[in-house]
Length: 245
Image: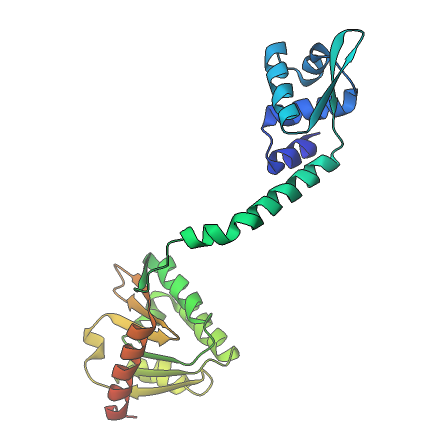
Protein backbone atom coordinates (compact mmCIF):
# COMPACT_ATOMS: atom_id res chain seq x y z
CA UNK A 1 0.00 0.00 0.00
CA UNK A 2 2.85 2.35 0.81
CA UNK A 3 4.19 1.98 -2.73
CA UNK A 4 0.79 2.87 -4.19
CA UNK A 5 0.58 5.91 -1.93
CA UNK A 6 4.01 7.06 -3.12
CA UNK A 7 3.07 6.65 -6.78
CA UNK A 8 -0.16 8.60 -6.37
CA UNK A 9 1.64 11.36 -4.47
CA UNK A 10 4.20 11.54 -7.26
CA UNK A 11 1.31 11.91 -9.70
CA UNK A 12 0.07 14.93 -7.77
CA UNK A 13 -2.32 13.77 -5.05
CA UNK A 14 -1.90 14.67 -1.42
CA UNK A 15 -1.39 11.80 1.03
CA UNK A 16 -5.02 11.97 2.21
CA UNK A 17 -6.34 12.18 -1.35
CA UNK A 18 -4.26 9.15 -2.31
CA UNK A 19 -5.50 7.26 0.77
CA UNK A 20 -9.14 7.99 -0.05
CA UNK A 21 -8.72 7.03 -3.71
CA UNK A 22 -7.07 3.73 -2.78
CA UNK A 23 -9.79 2.99 -0.22
CA UNK A 24 -12.46 3.61 -2.85
CA UNK A 25 -10.68 1.35 -5.36
CA UNK A 26 -10.77 -1.47 -2.83
CA UNK A 27 -14.36 -0.91 -1.69
CA UNK A 28 -16.08 -0.34 -5.00
CA UNK A 29 -19.23 1.80 -4.76
CA UNK A 30 -19.28 3.03 -1.16
CA UNK A 31 -20.83 5.64 1.09
CA UNK A 32 -18.85 8.44 2.70
CA UNK A 33 -18.94 6.62 6.03
CA UNK A 34 -17.56 3.43 4.50
CA UNK A 35 -14.74 5.29 2.78
CA UNK A 36 -13.94 7.26 5.94
CA UNK A 37 -13.71 4.07 7.96
CA UNK A 38 -11.44 2.35 5.42
CA UNK A 39 -9.21 5.44 5.02
CA UNK A 40 -9.17 6.07 8.79
CA UNK A 41 -10.28 9.68 8.37
CA UNK A 42 -13.15 11.68 9.83
CA UNK A 43 -16.31 11.88 7.75
CA UNK A 44 -16.21 15.59 6.94
CA UNK A 45 -12.61 15.40 5.74
CA UNK A 46 -13.38 12.33 3.65
CA UNK A 47 -16.39 14.04 2.04
CA UNK A 48 -14.37 17.14 1.12
CA UNK A 49 -11.65 14.96 -0.41
CA UNK A 50 -14.19 12.94 -2.40
CA UNK A 51 -15.64 16.18 -3.80
CA UNK A 52 -12.16 17.31 -4.83
CA UNK A 53 -11.37 13.97 -6.48
CA UNK A 54 -14.71 14.06 -8.30
CA UNK A 55 -13.86 17.51 -9.66
CA UNK A 56 -10.54 16.13 -10.90
CA UNK A 57 -12.31 13.28 -12.69
CA UNK A 58 -10.92 10.52 -10.49
CA UNK A 59 -14.13 9.76 -8.60
CA UNK A 60 -17.71 9.33 -9.76
CA UNK A 61 -20.97 9.15 -7.80
CA UNK A 62 -24.32 7.40 -7.97
CA UNK A 63 -27.43 7.05 -5.84
CA UNK A 64 -28.46 3.66 -4.50
CA UNK A 65 -31.56 3.32 -2.35
CA UNK A 66 -31.63 7.08 -2.02
CA UNK A 67 -28.10 7.07 -0.55
CA UNK A 68 -25.15 8.75 -2.28
CA UNK A 69 -22.35 6.36 -3.18
CA UNK A 70 -18.94 7.16 -4.63
CA UNK A 71 -16.92 5.09 -7.10
CA UNK A 72 -13.28 5.25 -8.12
CA UNK A 73 -12.73 5.88 -11.80
CA UNK A 74 -10.45 3.55 -13.76
CA UNK A 75 -6.77 4.24 -12.86
CA UNK A 76 -6.23 4.69 -16.60
CA UNK A 77 -7.72 8.13 -15.97
CA UNK A 78 -4.45 9.06 -14.28
CA UNK A 79 -2.57 8.57 -17.54
CA UNK A 80 -5.27 10.29 -19.58
CA UNK A 81 -5.12 13.27 -17.25
CA UNK A 82 -1.34 13.52 -17.66
CA UNK A 83 -1.74 13.37 -21.45
CA UNK A 84 -4.26 16.20 -21.31
CA UNK A 85 -1.93 18.31 -19.18
CA UNK A 86 0.94 17.62 -21.57
CA UNK A 87 -1.19 18.65 -24.52
CA UNK A 88 -2.22 21.90 -22.83
CA UNK A 89 1.39 22.73 -21.96
CA UNK A 90 2.53 22.07 -25.52
CA UNK A 91 -0.17 24.43 -26.80
CA UNK A 92 1.17 27.34 -24.74
CA UNK A 93 4.87 26.39 -24.81
CA UNK A 94 5.70 28.87 -27.57
CA UNK A 95 4.20 31.76 -25.61
CA UNK A 96 5.99 30.67 -22.44
CA UNK A 97 9.32 30.76 -24.27
CA UNK A 98 8.60 34.31 -25.40
CA UNK A 99 8.24 35.29 -21.74
CA UNK A 100 11.57 33.71 -20.79
CA UNK A 101 14.24 36.22 -19.85
CA UNK A 102 17.33 35.83 -22.00
CA UNK A 103 20.39 34.51 -20.18
CA UNK A 104 22.91 37.31 -19.80
CA UNK A 105 26.09 37.02 -21.84
CA UNK A 106 28.33 38.11 -18.97
CA UNK A 107 30.70 35.75 -17.19
CA UNK A 108 29.48 33.07 -14.83
CA UNK A 109 31.67 32.84 -11.73
CA UNK A 110 31.76 29.85 -9.40
CA UNK A 111 33.49 30.02 -6.02
CA UNK A 112 34.63 26.69 -4.59
CA UNK A 113 36.11 26.77 -1.12
CA UNK A 114 38.57 24.51 0.67
CA UNK A 115 40.24 21.34 -0.50
CA UNK A 116 36.93 19.95 -1.75
CA UNK A 117 36.61 23.05 -3.90
CA UNK A 118 40.04 22.37 -5.42
CA UNK A 119 38.94 18.80 -6.15
CA UNK A 120 35.82 20.12 -7.88
CA UNK A 121 38.02 22.23 -10.15
CA UNK A 122 40.16 19.17 -10.92
CA UNK A 123 37.03 17.33 -12.03
CA UNK A 124 35.86 20.26 -14.14
CA UNK A 125 39.18 20.36 -16.00
CA UNK A 126 38.44 16.89 -17.34
CA UNK A 127 34.96 17.68 -18.67
CA UNK A 128 36.16 19.82 -21.59
CA UNK A 129 38.09 17.53 -23.91
CA UNK A 130 40.38 20.27 -25.22
CA UNK A 131 44.06 21.12 -24.62
CA UNK A 132 44.74 22.96 -21.37
CA UNK A 133 47.26 25.71 -20.69
CA UNK A 134 48.32 26.52 -17.15
CA UNK A 135 50.76 28.68 -15.27
CA UNK A 136 51.65 29.42 -11.68
CA UNK A 137 52.41 27.59 -8.48
CA UNK A 138 51.28 24.14 -9.59
CA UNK A 139 53.75 22.08 -7.56
CA UNK A 140 52.14 23.16 -4.25
CA UNK A 141 48.97 21.37 -5.35
CA UNK A 142 50.86 18.08 -5.06
CA UNK A 143 51.66 18.95 -1.43
CA UNK A 144 48.19 20.25 -0.66
CA UNK A 145 46.31 17.34 -2.28
CA UNK A 146 48.87 14.69 -3.22
CA UNK A 147 46.43 11.91 -4.15
CA UNK A 148 43.82 14.11 -5.89
CA UNK A 149 46.42 16.07 -7.86
CA UNK A 150 48.19 12.93 -9.07
CA UNK A 151 44.88 11.25 -9.92
CA UNK A 152 43.80 14.28 -11.95
CA UNK A 153 47.05 14.21 -13.94
CA UNK A 154 46.70 10.49 -14.65
CA UNK A 155 43.06 10.79 -15.66
CA UNK A 156 43.78 13.75 -17.93
CA UNK A 157 46.53 11.79 -19.70
CA UNK A 158 44.23 8.79 -20.08
CA UNK A 159 41.63 11.02 -21.73
CA UNK A 160 44.26 12.36 -24.15
CA UNK A 161 44.02 15.95 -22.90
CA UNK A 162 47.39 17.64 -23.36
CA UNK A 163 48.65 20.41 -21.09
CA UNK A 164 51.20 23.18 -21.46
CA UNK A 165 52.56 24.46 -18.16
CA UNK A 166 54.50 27.56 -17.20
CA UNK A 167 56.02 27.47 -13.74
CA UNK A 168 59.22 28.35 -11.89
CA UNK A 169 62.32 26.15 -12.10
CA UNK A 170 62.85 24.71 -8.62
CA UNK A 171 64.03 21.32 -7.31
CA UNK A 172 60.38 20.41 -6.67
CA UNK A 173 59.11 21.37 -10.13
CA UNK A 174 61.99 19.51 -11.77
CA UNK A 175 61.40 16.39 -9.68
CA UNK A 176 57.60 16.31 -9.44
CA UNK A 177 56.60 17.87 -12.76
CA UNK A 178 59.27 18.18 -15.46
CA UNK A 179 60.62 14.66 -14.92
CA UNK A 180 57.15 13.21 -15.56
CA UNK A 181 56.13 15.36 -18.52
CA UNK A 182 56.06 12.58 -21.09
CA UNK A 183 53.77 10.16 -19.29
CA UNK A 184 51.61 13.06 -18.08
CA UNK A 185 51.04 14.29 -21.67
CA UNK A 186 52.47 17.62 -20.58
CA UNK A 187 55.08 20.13 -21.76
CA UNK A 188 56.63 22.30 -19.09
CA UNK A 189 58.54 25.54 -19.51
CA UNK A 190 59.95 27.86 -16.87
CA UNK A 191 59.59 31.51 -16.00
CA UNK A 192 60.93 33.13 -12.82
CA UNK A 193 59.16 34.16 -9.62
CA UNK A 194 56.13 31.92 -10.01
CA UNK A 195 56.54 30.47 -6.53
CA UNK A 196 56.08 33.94 -5.01
CA UNK A 197 52.46 33.99 -6.18
CA UNK A 198 50.30 31.27 -4.54
CA UNK A 199 48.03 30.86 -7.55
CA UNK A 200 47.71 28.28 -10.30
CA UNK A 201 45.65 29.22 -13.35
CA UNK A 202 44.18 26.85 -15.92
CA UNK A 203 42.58 27.85 -19.23
CA UNK A 204 40.41 25.14 -20.79
CA UNK A 205 37.78 25.66 -23.45
CA UNK A 206 35.77 28.75 -22.56
CA UNK A 207 36.74 28.49 -18.89
CA UNK A 208 39.46 29.87 -16.63
CA UNK A 209 40.11 28.26 -13.25
CA UNK A 210 42.12 30.00 -10.54
CA UNK A 211 43.41 27.94 -7.63
CA UNK A 212 44.67 29.65 -4.50
CA UNK A 213 47.38 27.26 -3.34
CA UNK A 214 47.79 28.76 0.15
CA UNK A 215 47.85 25.63 2.34
CA UNK A 216 45.94 27.43 5.11
CA UNK A 217 43.27 28.84 2.82
CA UNK A 218 42.84 26.83 -0.41
CA UNK A 219 40.26 28.19 -2.81
CA UNK A 220 38.97 27.49 -6.31
CA UNK A 221 37.40 29.98 -8.70
CA UNK A 222 35.98 29.14 -12.13
CA UNK A 223 35.16 31.91 -14.60
CA UNK A 224 33.08 30.76 -17.55
CA UNK A 225 33.35 33.31 -20.33
CA UNK A 226 34.72 32.70 -23.84
CA UNK A 227 36.22 36.17 -24.34
CA UNK A 228 38.01 36.16 -20.99
CA UNK A 229 39.34 32.64 -21.65
CA UNK A 230 40.57 33.69 -25.10
CA UNK A 231 42.41 36.71 -23.68
CA UNK A 232 44.04 34.61 -20.97
CA UNK A 233 45.20 32.12 -23.59
CA UNK A 234 46.75 34.96 -25.62
CA UNK A 235 48.61 36.12 -22.49
CA UNK A 236 49.80 32.57 -21.90
CA UNK A 237 51.08 32.26 -25.48
CA UNK A 238 53.12 35.47 -25.12
CA UNK A 239 54.74 34.17 -21.94
CA UNK A 240 55.24 30.72 -23.45
CA UNK A 241 57.35 32.06 -26.30
CA UNK A 242 59.69 33.80 -23.84
CA UNK A 243 59.93 30.93 -21.34
CA UNK A 244 62.90 28.61 -20.85
CA UNK A 245 62.61 24.93 -21.68
